[in-house]
Image (cartoon, rainbow, N blue to C red; front, top):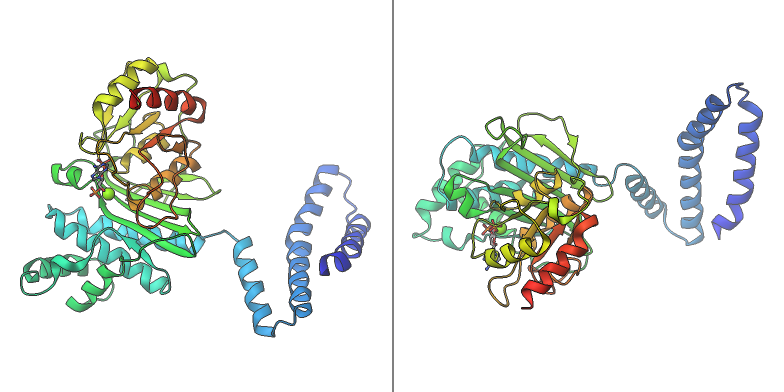
Length: 393
Ligand SMILES: Nc1ncnc2c1ncn2[C@@H]1O[C@H](COP(=O)(O)O)[C@@H](OP(=O)(O)O)[C@H]1O
Ligand SMILES: [Mg+2]
């Protein structure tokens, strides 16, 4: 109703005003000036008037109208800018505490979850977290030695130190069951535990999911070369994606971000694919058969953790296959949320073995999906066909 009453006359008057007062001869400069004035003066004022009028007609209180204006302004500004900054800071801190020396994987896992959960809770106290770990093994007398080591490591990166009880509470903030409504974060404090133990690839993976849709993903890869072409060069990357805002990479040592894109590939024969190092997590035999069917001649790139999603996102490989080994295994949302958004924002396509989109709204696992297939949109359908042929044999 307010739109109907106000929009027509206001817009007409505004454009008449622009025509009358912008007297620049150069047509392009004139157009640019009008667009600038339109976007900086008219659009914000119009939106404010529109929502105020709407609120008054709906008999909203002054505070309710102000709240709505604030939320609209927030949406129109860079969406999730605060969440992005907080998530980067949390993942960076978790990466930094793990790099300096060799740390037992359990200590690393608990400490990374504590650090990220503490930072999330401080900034977004109402947001629930679906984290991989819980504090069970750290409690009581039997858990004391491990608890003290985790506490010591955690406090190395916090601005103000915490005590044992705060540590346990922080870890257990990751106990949320997930679901389809509202905001939640999902965290894998050390994804690729086997890679971490071998001193190879692992990742700290954090994602924001709203109403079942992944909106933000940050993946820290402390051992991944910054440049795939220079495997002995600088190591340690951070990958960041916000829905509809693209995918970016930076090194752990710099704040400069550069966009990442899937490598263009027109046919599967020229593609390369990656898969888990662990044969227990992805069926290597089936992957070999699929590669043969597609005419792929390059050997698989085997790597632990969501570093695989990062690698394909920046074009190091073209396909990522995660083929079920164990019937009934349900993939965990923290193993895929940030990586899958990164791939999509880099121009790739993600589905399960049956071509279904990954569904993050069903709790802590992807219970309606089987396996994961990632490829450039040009070849995704062909890859899927080969996967189905082999897996249905
Ligand atoms: N049978 C199985 N099939 C697929 N994934 C499995 C699995 N058993 C464990 N995983 C998951 O595989 C993840 C590692 O994947 P990858 O092999 O690609 O590095 C593990 O994460 P964590 O290492 O965080 O425990 C774990 O959640
Ligand atoms: Mg994991």
